[in-house]
Length: 316
Image 1 (tube, rainbow, N blue to C red):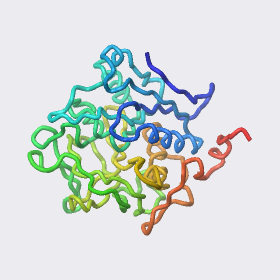
Image 2 (cartoon, rainbow, N blue to C red):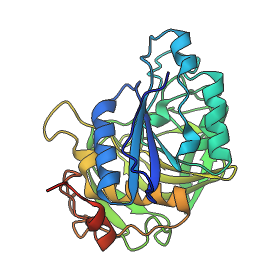
Image 3 (tube, rainbow, N blue to C red):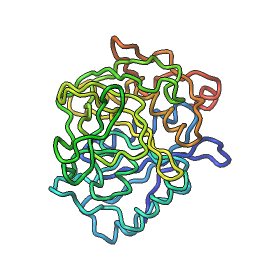
Image 4 (cartoon, helix red, strand yellow):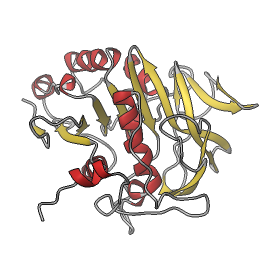
């Protein structure tokens, strides 16, 4: 049995998004709340959530859990298998659910894995091709593909047999630098902007097929430029891989990374892009520059354009 919490209105022409969550080594509940709020606040999306069984649920429960991916244009990944086993774990998703998802993306569905979703499924080859590269979860040099490094101005695969396979160091603010400023997701944004305190994922390892790096940040831990925003093509589908997005639930201010206006903007515009191939969502006037981040809760952020304001009905 699959439980879906729906916000779709009959006759809606908005982009239909499904957030998949339920197991994660991060605060997936608050991440889902923030993600849903950001997307819906733009007025461009309706968002449902599909929460998986618990990690220790019996196989029968996982077999019965089959999200209806094809009812949506975009799936947002807020799930990982919380695997700490050397060599990786068997996927929690059933073979049928994995096949459904591969078919959905390869036939043109959009996928937006956020932050720790790239920790998932070290041994699911198709998933790793979809995300380009991931970390932890049993990934290792010699078996899990390459690192992606900026060498003489070109992103190149390196180090298949040596190096880390996921790291982030201490949380901090960091500068996001656009590699493709004319890409529809980034067009019109400052080419450099400060992201709020977050984990900067580094040394992600994978096959890196059909990957376009849209933006990167410099890691003080690895002393390397690390991809932060990527577009991947998988069959007819597009994936927008966002490596930031750690929901800080340990100390105030809580959730500042996912409340960063820069993060919210690229999340929304990226989701629209992988659904439609276009970006119509405007840029909030509070978008940060390179000096300091701007943090605004999703329900307080103002998005430009009449369509967003007309559809943001609070019932007052």
